[in-house]
Length: 209
Image (cartoon, rainbow, N blue to C red; front, side, top):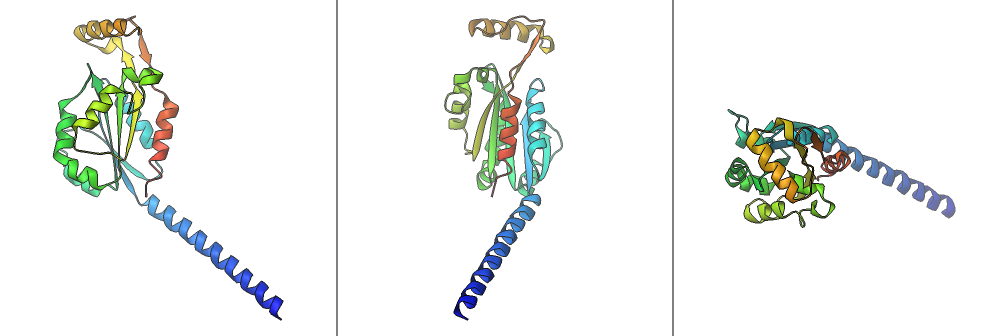
């Protein structure tokens, strides 16, 4: 009798634990599905937009993708309705666009209240020793300057799109690339973006709690 009782209790506890485990998993999955991630980006030549789109594809819950350059958008409302916020921006001549700084200055309080991520897109990140927030000087200086403290930061290599540049930009960037031992053939386009890295970053954005 005692043996049967103990066996029965063990079986009950096993079933109860399994039910509780399944319930917790289901609750987490349901909550995750109801989440919304807002992805905002500033792009110069289109590569940052492509990266933002790829990140959105990797996220399994609802996403909204918007350019910071979009007119007539109530960004305050968009930020308020999002559970997670991602901002991406490109660098040109060593600097992020003033619009990015202005946006963060205006909205840093709500940005710091929610899970958030920032991704920097620049040519310097094509070098293995310049593709982390600590080793990428432009990203490091940017983060030190702003009031927003993103939960996650990713540094992603961009693209060198000579044929799309104005003559002035083409000559300036060509000179910079020559000084940094990069590609200088202005008739070609060079993509340095590691799309597997982009996918991994997007997948990590599903893990927010």
